Image (cartoon, rainbow, N blue to C red; front, top):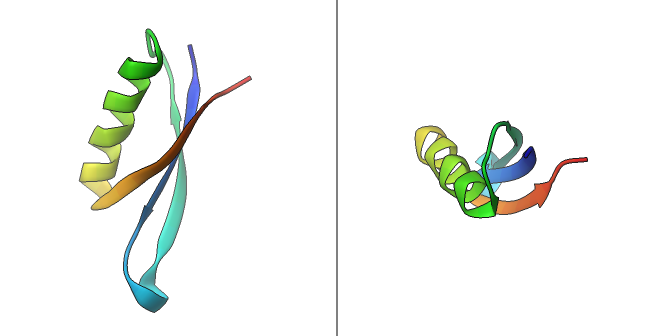
Length: 53
């Protein structure tokens, strides 16, 4: 399954948002775990996750 995660971070004028494609996830929880790992690397947080069509 493929998912699209929106990751946000920063403060004030330095806020940012990035889309991260999660490929090869077994299910939603697997995608959430992978997205959290990306967010930690980017020093941000997972804002949303959706199934990619």
